[in-house]
Amino acid sequence: MSAGGARILAVDDEAPMQRLLRRNLEARGYQVETAGRAREGLGLFRSWRPDLVVLDLNLPDMDGVDFIREVRETSAVPILVLSAREAERDRVAALDAGADDYVPKPFGVEELLARVRVSLRHAAGPLVGNDATWRSGELAIDLDRRRVVVRGEEVHLTPTEYDLLKAFVRHRGRVLTDRALLHEVWGPEYSEESHYLHVYVARLRKKIEPDANRPRYLLTEPGIGYRFAEDAL
Image (cartoon, rainbow, N blue to C red; front, side):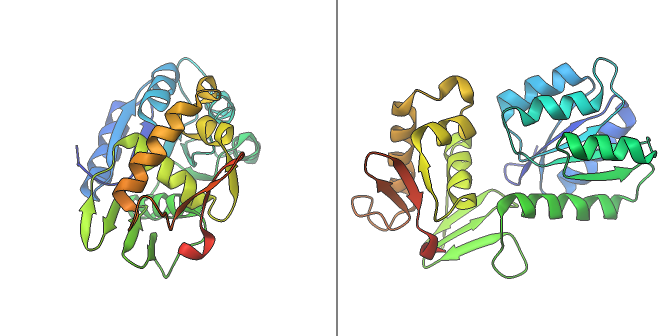
């Protein structure tokens, strides 16, 4: 598995399709996990926190549309559907449930990879230039490759630190309550555990701020929560 790159969870009950997806996605630098059943996929989704889900609708233990609905209860992660179902009603049902894109099988690998890139970039919000890299002064955040660079040096972030930073960048300029951030990054069961958030914000500041005691990016909104400075990017 690649050490960098966006995390992609592929849920498909056909082993050859899992191998095809893994081989082609990992060759482009993405991290990939696969599952052959919906419940297995949901477990990986909750524990691994992927940046994108590639989903077949025909699963042995749950319809893919129900899988989408379950994910959407707690997450806005992009979902790219791959399915042999070509009827318009199936596409509409998947998109109405919360899928971001729908690619019918059989498909071209290059088209699939392009759709993956588009889904990841849409999840990141408006882009700078033609790629998914955010830059401000000495800070650069590559949302496709999960890389953070400060003063020309790559900074190692834990998965949780990266997920928190990504949430801040996606909602830059907006005041985010502790509860909203905890729900998005850790899950609804942690929505009252503000100490988790405060510890991780302090860690992020030490890693990305020019001066952690006088933050430029991760600003505190007293009595409310935090804000990623809109003019910092």
